[in-house]
Length: 138
Image (cartoon, rainbow, N blue to C red; front, side):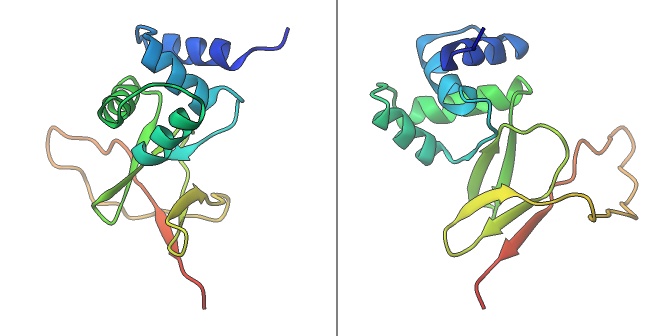
């Protein structure tokens, strides 16, 4: 049986323990409905929702993305300290940031080595390390 985008979105929300509101279902279907991983900004997801005929405010998109992150369904990847991308792929992996198009994509992780991280302060642990490799045309 083929899963629909709505089915995938509903299952995804359930994994995060989130109540499936209309807005959450609509955004989840856009994010994971085809089974592919996504890197989105709040603005790009808002535009996708608008193109799909979904009535949702930009503030709701921001709040929903934050809820998805808090539920462990997505990771936020901050670029330049001012631009956030939201990634549905949850394993540890590096990213390419394409400066000419301001887009984020997965980078191959097979040759990446991170060594010599400093010890976390007392009472803390490293939760993750984000690697963003910036690319520009030559």
